[in-house]
Every structure is written in C-alpha cells, then in structure tokens.
Length: 230
Image (cartoon, rainbow, N blue to C red; front, side, top):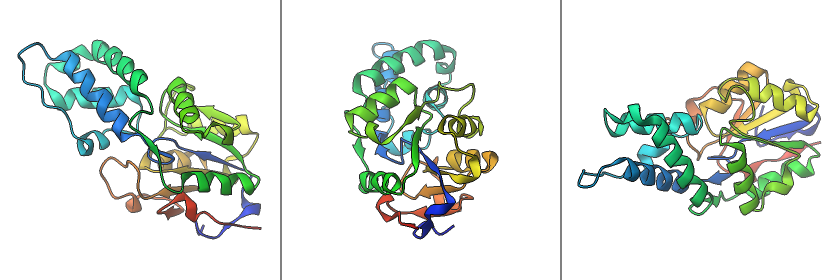
C-alpha cells in the first residue's frame, strides 16, 4: 500500500489513534506524571522531575502501564505504592487534560481527507474513554468520528487486536477493509493481528524507537499527505 496513493475502493472505514497521531499530548503526560511524583515524595526528600524524552518512551500502552513504568524508573519503593500513585495521576491528568497539548500540523487536513473519501471514522486510543472524549472536544475533533473507544472500553488494550476487532464490529466493517492509522508498534502489532492494513505517522511516540523500523504498510510525515484515488 502506497500511503500517498491510497485507492478509495480498498477501504470502508478508518480507525485513528489519538495521542501521538492526532494530538501531541506529551506535555500533558509530563505535567501529570511529575505532579504525581511530587505527591509521592515526602517533605525534604529529593524530587527529580522526569523530562519529556523519558516520559515519551513510556507512553502508549495505557495509563496503568505508564504509571507502573514511571514508578519503576523513579524509585525502588514506589511500585508498592501503585494504587496511591494511580489515583494521584488520574486526579492530575483530569485537571490538565488538553492544557499542554496541540493538534499536530496536518491532523485536521488528514481527518478531512478521510471524511471526504466517504470512510466511516472511529477514534481508537488506549487513553481512558472519558479523557479521550474530553480531549477531542477541547481540540474540536469530535465531529469527525462516529465512534470513540478508549483503553477502558474493552477487556484488553492495543497491542492486543481485540479493540480493533470490536471497533470494526461497531463500524459494521471487516478488518481487511478498515485502515488503522497510528504512530507506534502498538498500533501496528494490533493491526497485523486483527488483519487490518496499517499506516503509521513518523512523528509520534514509539517508545523511543525509530518508527520506520516497525512492520507497517506505509508511513507519512504528516496526515496532510494522505491522498485517496477513486
């Protein structure tokens, strides 16, 4: 599949990831993670905030995984305080959701291209559903999607194929005709296992690894590059 020369007749729908694909939310993650760590530290204890590069390598497999990864990175005794940490993280993230984030250049153009091609669109993210809906609304993106599913919508998250298969069912499409648009190996692995074609953007969060090394059908540097042929 040539991502710059897509054939409209090959697709009925598209599933689009959110964090790292449509919206650069790394600033939100960094702010919430560091506020969480500040809550966990006792007065007088040294507190070293995590930078964006470090947090970015931990993003992509859902909030629970992110908090666990941060705790393991931060201090040996923190993993035992996971429940406290997760509550803190959720509290802080809810307060700042969207505040430090921005729609990627080309994001709106890409969604319009998918919409104008007549595809049914779903947003499929590992972000909790309530947070995803709030972010889409804040950034003016909610109107593009007939379905929105988050990391808590199904029993398992990407890279498991279940969310993709369930989303195809909700859209009334078959996986082979439903394009997955994402930014990481999580999206690609889930798509491969589900039988969906997959297109990856090159600018998102792929655990610190070069995304072009991922097994995908194509890559774009901007969603504005999407072009469909009739």
